[in-house]
Image 1 (cartoon, helix red, strand yellow):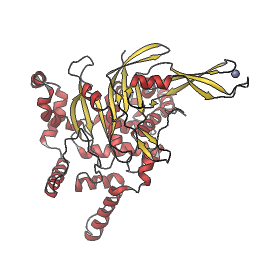
Image 2 (cartoon, protein in one colour):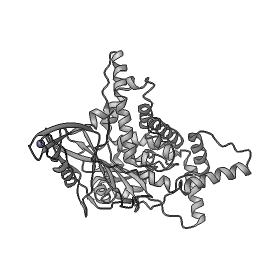
Image 3 (tube, protein in one colour):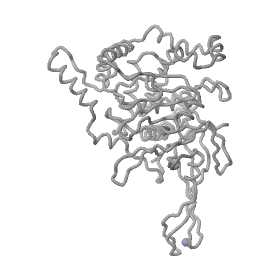
Length: 447
Ligand SMILES: [Zn+2]
């Protein structure tokens, strides 16, 4: 079985802690709503399936089970000052469920690409047109009625990897008819409606995707908060595990199926063990979809973190010569087209309390990584950040480069995806602002 985890990595089960702290106020609150509605309004029919229930609550309350516990730096929402304001926001959100003419126009505008107005705006500076652009980009967002910001962020990051997505699209004939490939279909359905202003449709597709993931990873079945890294590795592992079956199905029709996860994200690491007694060397290779890196206390760059990961370590190892220690060194056999790095921002204290690590990570757009095939230059294209001060409460947001803008384009245009809110930003701003919160990084290799 393919695994994305390395023995050296210690993915901490962030959500386990959350779950044991009681299902949280949100769930209890929602249950109250159910009870009250049930006893006082007999005519109301409460839907049975989770999807219908979410849509029902979404229609009633706009964002029923989502309650931001922490402020988000990029959010444009101001905390509610009074009940009146909160009520107004409630109505505004509720009304937004139905696409406004502006939003209808949104996807058309997206496709039209930049007009002369944008060129002029660029000359004046991107900030001067931010309000108009925020409205324009809103249709790129994903609604979040049930605490799945971790999934929304992972999906936005994956959709930024346009070659990866394109590899799925070009092989549609293989996965579209395979009954086992529901996960890929659900993913591509989301891709197809990425720019749609239809919030209801998006919720249905997001829940369908979550359900598809939960078939093999039941830990994602409920609507509690989860760890984005665990979710992402599970999605990629599942997509990858479908490969043999899809290859066989394709071959039976005279076609070829090439797994996009293997082609774009998987890379090999070489582990060289040298016995300290006799010097005997053993070399093994292992496949990864991502690496989990320790943060450098006090701060450091991603290069430094990688160097620490690859540096020689001593370990217990019983050799035939009688020696009990050996040296182990790791190296990249090859570099993937997209290198995914997980920053270990969560750790357990000696008393097994989950703790968030805030050490800064100096982010730069470019990264040079050495492999057995030579040095490779990579560029940051997306980040997933966990915005919070504690490990228990938090919110995931994603930043991704605008795939329509060429890498050498001086505008350096990126988007910040905060559920349904999408704002324009730059790669430079992302590197500056995500130092203390970045959690997963995606680097694209220069060909
Ligand atoms: Zn030995």
